[in-house]
Length: 110
Image (cartoon, rainbow, N blue to C red):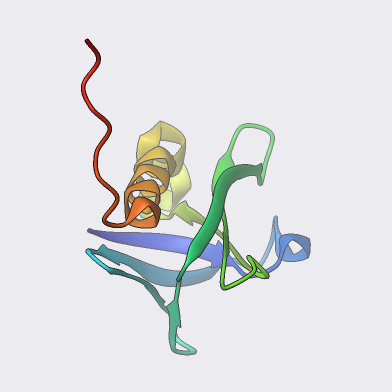
């Protein structure tokens, strides 16, 4: 899957000066391609949400061996409205699947 995103690498940057990138979530590999280079997002330690405005939450990702690296990103399509209308949820869901890796699916409920 491929997503056009705005992103920040630090929480203190939130709210201004968004950077653009392309998030690629593929089996066994998650990357963020930016003007500065490619960021490998592995292993994903935790996922959550962070408010960037009164009504908009971006995806918050902690990754790396100890979860010391972080990224904040949101769907940039339609000037950010796609994120409000479910795009950020789709990004988070794709990342959750990638974080689960090859773990077996839970059994269906009885």
